[in-house]
Length: 138
Image (tube, rainbow, N blue to C red):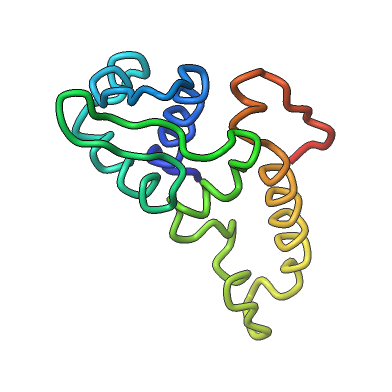
């Protein structure tokens, strides 16, 4: 399952894409327009800043603005930023041959690769323009 931090980080980046300007957008503005509490945003934004997806500025005219081209920000990369373990079954992480999953491990690996491919082909720009194509089912 994908965490609410990852989902909200994606929402924030879509919002910043739609508001794209050289001005910084306040955390309060982001909070008010995305139904995300200020406290929660304070937990989400440091990772986006550290990964250089956004620039941060303190002070009265401070806030956040997009630092990368939205087309270059892939959903898969954001999921990896916020999820400790994105594997659907832990055995994929270790691929333990003695696992009780070893007869089904290929199925889980194929699913993981489809999931990775799907989210690697969707960018923040695609989401902001509603222009992503689902060409296979997960």
